[in-house]
Image 1 (cartoon, rainbow, N blue to C red):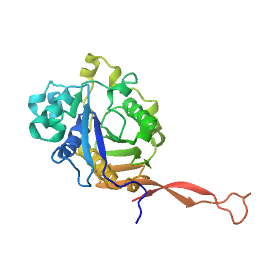
Image 2 (image 1 turned 90 degrees about the vertical axis):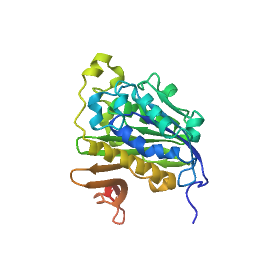
Image 3 (image 1 turned 90 degrees about the horizontal axis):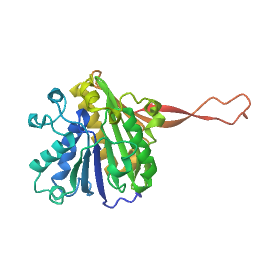
Image 4 (image 1 turned 45 degrees about the horizontal axis):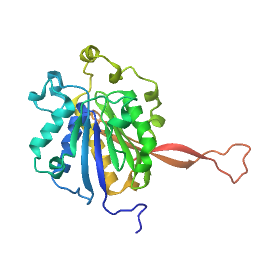
Length: 278
């Protein structure tokens, strides 16, 4: 059966933005890409950048995956050092293709701080809307280069994962701001604009480890499904999960037959939109 995309193996690059609650758990999955030069579908993992301007605090140990000896260190740098210890002989490590960027992403530096937009998969693990929106706009600008953005977020027990961009020439999803327009206006948690003292005084939030783990898992699952066949995730709009209720919903668009207006001819129907749970 002919596929909708060129299914020959490709090389791809990864960028993880945010190495906190979701990011550290997601990196536990992604680090397995260091073991072999090819993933299970024959594609080649080329490089990984981890971006975060924050530092680990002792209070983060309860729900973030890092060593206690890293308290006080930059999060991105600490994660890179961990990988160098775990996989010193991997091609990515030995080739210096895994690196940390110890900064927050801002509108001024976004196009310089992110890796080259070529077969790039961005994982947004940040905890603020301003950065999510910024990464979405970047992805839409460069998606013809096969840039994909997988965004994860969560509250205390529940959360969602969104996927957008283009992979192997297959358009995927739609910009996250179309599904969640609130991210375009809410800048109250934009950490890039805060001073060091303001960052220190910010609360940790009320997310629990189980919700962070849920977001990380579904981000990784969406990533692996896309590697296998991007057409399978092309129309996925959101993945919602609720750890307390043990529920997961995948939201896709579906055209259904709606009521025809009074002025329409008898045989005409007007398509409307609804979501389908799968």
